[in-house]
Image (cartoon, rainbow, N blue to C red):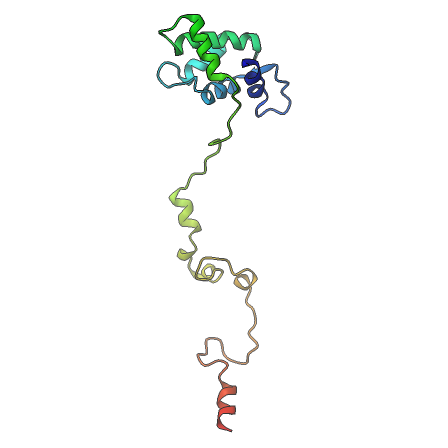
Length: 170
């Protein structure tokens, strides 16, 4: 069962990975996603140290056999009160059937600077003309001066009332 989890995490994020070897970042991800890292007995630093200890000097990856060794090392630390064999079984239970999670991978930060710069109600001058009252863009009408061919001066209050006055007198 641990072999399946090893394969899933080994290929995660790497299109060229075969699933036979695992990189350090995927090892750390496996330990975090499967709750091997608890913040008290086992930290991410411990996980990195174990990875460096298990892998060869000039190699950047570990095989499945080395992976099992690494789990054994961490299981002693994670489950201190239990025997080595019990601790290893508990470790396998944590990892069994798990795969890399994608939730919370990228978080967008809502900084006050960005929200201030994108708040259209605070725009002034010609920029203010590009948006309506709700903050939605006006499109072409907001970017170009569209010619008003009504015959009235711009800003004239009674625009369009001439016909009513003339027809009203007859």
